[in-house]
Length: 346
Image (cartoon, rainbow, N blue to C red; front, side, top):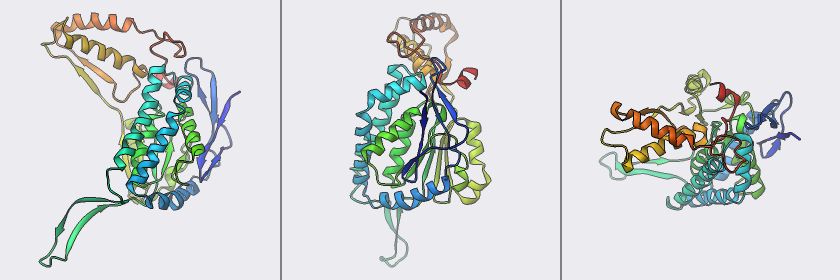
């Protein structure tokens, strides 16, 4: 039976109406879930986060916010195996790839949770030293970093539905700002389950965590000057978001992590048979096959001295030939399918 996903907005789970988008098992093509955001009041969801989640988080000190992140990490880690299975079902991840994503999420939450304990028993950050601004020694200036009175809206990519959520959530919550997470619809099953776990555990104040499972709809129309938008995805979409007239007019902070162009470069002194040559071949093969190459850090160019090209080609061919490709639920498989049909077409 196909599961219908809900969004967590205004402190409650809500299902959209109308035509639903389908989430697939990329190994078989079977529909594993469906979701819609039609009819959801996204303006009210943002207002609830600002007026309920914001004050609750700002009332906490850095160590208390850090404790919140540690509790989130613990709650999610307790469901690690279940989340890994969902990553295989809806993302085509092997067990190793799934752990890479899920452990990345919990590890990042835990890191920032521990960092919160080192920032002092307060809810704001002192930036630099104070400066005397006039002859009168009582006239001084001091920069303070304080939480925005808005919402951190996170539009995340399809390839890391766990880690993408965790890394952005950690910095927003530690800063005392509630978040609204909008994962890529195609692989949202992992993120939705993460939110279910966190809501059931009751680790965050009301309004601190919101989830939009499906199309963004008119979400961006409701952003205010105190809100911030963080997008991970294509450069074209990032450019469109940066140039939206309404966001520019309101001064909404927009941060974009877009297409990368990474290279692996072999120096002329790395002769075949050396440890460095063997390491290069292994790392190139791993980047080509981990997450089926669907990583922002994956290499897209391999630069090799002409004289070493035949040796590298043969060594890399042999290394990649050992990788078994197929259904990630099978123990012998080391690389699963691409996550979506559109990825395959690209």
